[in-house]
Image (cartoon, rainbow, N blue to C red; front, side):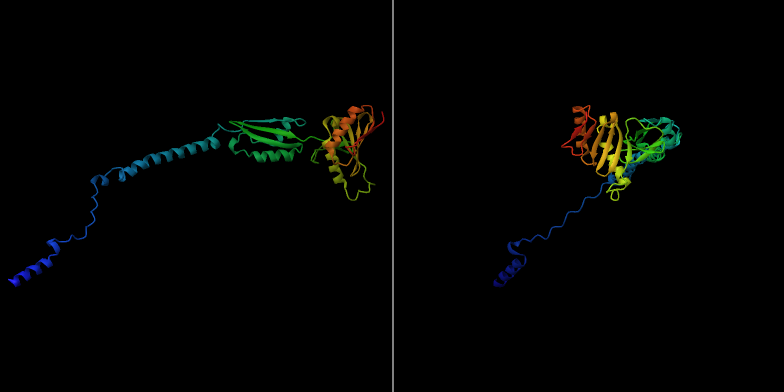
Length: 283
């Protein structure tokens, strides 16, 4: 009996405590099988990709056609070509002179016209032009809007006059002096500063002075006489003279001279070389 009891216990120990088996490690679940619809012509299948490509290709084709049609309309058709060229802003020049110098290619596609080249050609052929705007006027026009240089000083050259603008550019030679533009007289040969300030420098000073004159005074100025860098005289109408001095403080001198002309209309000599202490004499 004792032996049987021992055998039963041994059997119980081998089967584990409590007589129950321990569970083994769990296996991961298997992925679900793909449905047959995914292999067919559903949204993710080849049929769906083809369906998406069709409108894309159609859009690309339409874009190519539009681009080709637009290019043909701009360059190949007769719809958008230069048929009319106009000029405006002229004062001394005539519109015909501007149109001839511009040489805009009539009949060319409007989009191909080089506006910068036309502007450069105008300034080169007509130095009187200070600036020009060349604009396309769709569907058939080109507009040329010019701004002419204004002379502020004249340099007498034999029987003619060279016009000089406010920047010192000599842009034209005319046979008759324009009204209201003073004539330059350089008389600085014996000036102590002649070696330091050459003729070109003195010309710039005279141009600066003429350009800074108030409009009312400029119209009455007949001559700008430069004797040295800091000795400039103005000859006005009615025999009046003005000691201007150097080109410095031009605006202040202009205001002082304006006040003196109003205060002493019968005076014939004015000195604004020191604008804070102007002087007048003769009456």
